[in-house]
Length: 287
Length: 259
Image 1 (cartoon, each protein chain N blue to C red):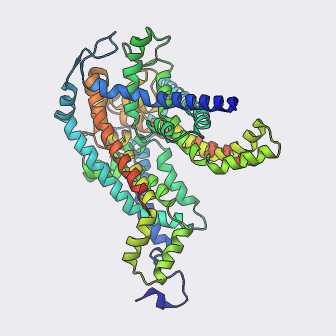
Image 2 (image 1 turned 60 degrees about the vertical axis):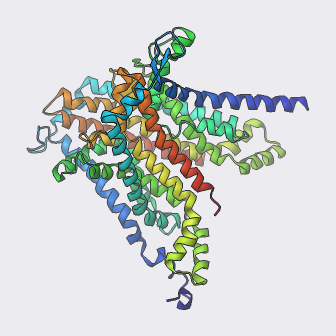
Image 3 (image 1 turned 30 degrees about the vertical axis):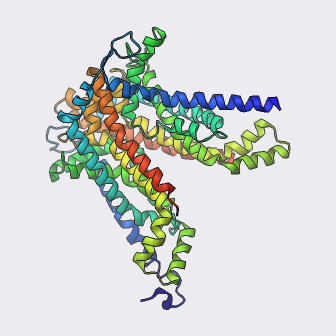
């Protein structure tokens, strides 16, 4: 039937509108609920059954042993430390780079954006080739002032994330720093706003939301990822992810349960970080 | 005005330095990949050759490349099909309270993938899905689907709905409306969503390690080479990078097509 002949019911003929919202959301929501919910439920179940085949009544012994393990405390501290450092430094660098590039042409933006599609693991490989013992940096300038690959302080890990995440945040910032912002800044300047006032009252409100959102994505990734610490991080302290990765080999019976418990702590830490970031962004918006 | 000219020059220099700082380190990969001999302290390789590429294409690594490609394509396709209707609802702002859906989309991106993967393995082992392609596609969907929905949603909205309404009034049927109006209008967003989905699956480490123990995937095969054979690691890295670059080119071209 010709939709135009149906009369005044405007919305009816459109493709998406024939189906109720619930039906349209259902495929994605059902798949995600099943997979993500199932994944979390599976991890919880594993953490409560510290036996080889995961049978037996649920018990908390794996949780107790993990939470009392000094190696776990080290891993938690090291993970949070690298996460906060990498995120804060990337965010600060991104603001500076975006400010330097906002009036530049496409080539400079393209060069800066190059690391964005490069997988984290590759950036870690590049870091080892440049900064590792006998790497290109040492050959070019002699000895490095401090070890950057597999160092206990995790500087190599932070450096890899700084290189990989800064461009990602720069792209988010540049997307907001278009002509509209320049016009508003000009208007503020005409009205007598100083450079600092323009930064505080015109630029910052524009970039705050994408910066906070991007930084949250970065932090969540750094906290849980482990190809980077596995490649350039120290063997001790581990991160939460590498701690979990090691458990099944260290303890054949309860290792899987201990790994699941450690990973659930990492998951909880990510969610706490997310809630804190959302709150912070909202408060800053009010202030 | 010399002061302005000087500042413009300085700005250009800063931009150039910043560009080089981010682009240059990657140049080591192609050199290392063909360096059959590159001993310290030499700044350039002593002997060039194809040993690294042979290691990369032969053995486990070649199969891993195919596995990674198949899983990434299948996951992205599934995510686009499953995600399109949901993105439509979110992009058109049809929900009065979209927060619960957005939280559900954000959660898998916040929780470490290795955690979700470890939990999924628990069920996949029972269902016979562990170590297989289907299991990996399902596991990758947990992170790829949210990204695809969130990016795709930004392509819909009031303007597109108005265009579609105009098409309806001129008598275009649903199929032709989709082909002639909707798809061309959202093509750049569709390309971006597909690209992001592909890259997220392609470079996924934690989920593949947790779920696909028996099926070699490229990132997992690559990592051990970093310490033992830098040349093979660099050659594999180039292979690892190739589809990302290709996908980026295709997406950029698709986005540039006239609407």
